Length: 125
Image (cartoon, rainbow, N blue to C red; front, side):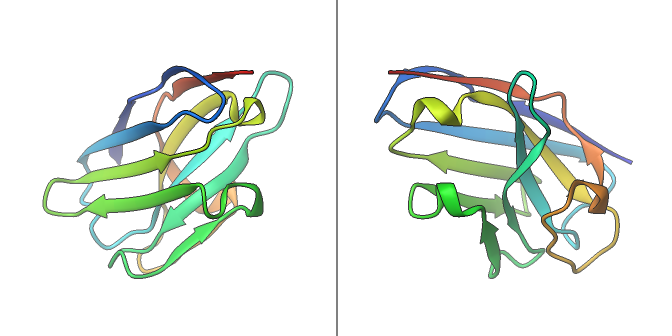
């Protein structure tokens, strides 16, 4: 099992930027896709972005394409999400997660077995 700890959340005005980080320990995740999900109050958890084990393939939800960039550093067991041009609708708790099986790249929560506790992102208008 991997332990995942997010950081970098905060409060910004619309149009601002934040960079989220996720530190992994425990299970080796270099062969696994890792991703970011978010959950706003009263809403279901939704996929934001994922990156495959090599870092060469990525996925994004449509509403964050061209604004968010996912990356990873396998040597340091770290995952990142650079978020630019933030909008109030991006407000949510952001969680990082690691897939259950190696060499995938999924966008469904059921594919991910290890989760962090989340970091709050609040975007004011």
